[in-house]
Image 1 (spheres, rainbow, N blue to C red):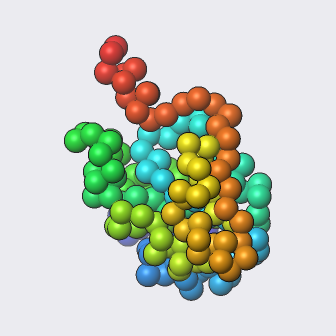
Image 2 (cartoon, one colour):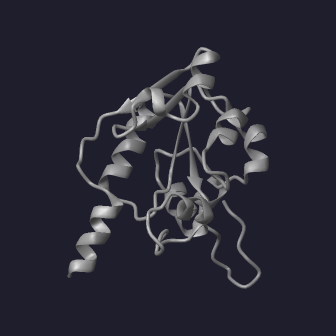
Amino acid sequence: MPDATPQSPIPRPAFESKIIAPAELAGQVRTLPSPLVFTNGCFDILHRGHVTLLAEARALGAALIVALNSDGSVRRLGKGIDRPVNNLPDRLAVIAALESVTLVTWFEEDTPLPRILDCRPDILVKGGDWPVDQIVGNREVSGWGGRVLSLPFVHQTSTTALLDKIRRL
């Protein structure tokens, strides 16, 4: 059971223990069962497409690591000056609370390659809008005998479309 904070007798939610700083990732990965699956993204406003992708990714292996773009990294992607809507600590907590996620971490860089190299996944997964040959880490994961997959979208949802809909209301 998680420790209570000195200010509150209520214990911290157990899912918070799934949030791992990048410097701790390599050490934590050694304790996880194989095959290890890795995916990444902004996961700004979580929607059905996100949770479906994460559940499908987890079904491919015994453990799932998710790496989130830092707030600065999201802004550099050109998604808009108001993105991310949710800050990194909030996005980490929401992703960590999902049953399908084993560990969640983040990256400050423009790509997740450093986290991919930290954990050396057996399977690298992205959503269907990513051709396999354009997935960051494809060369590295394939090089050590892993698989790289672009999972087809089951639900045609996106955070950008959701925000556009909200703005029209």
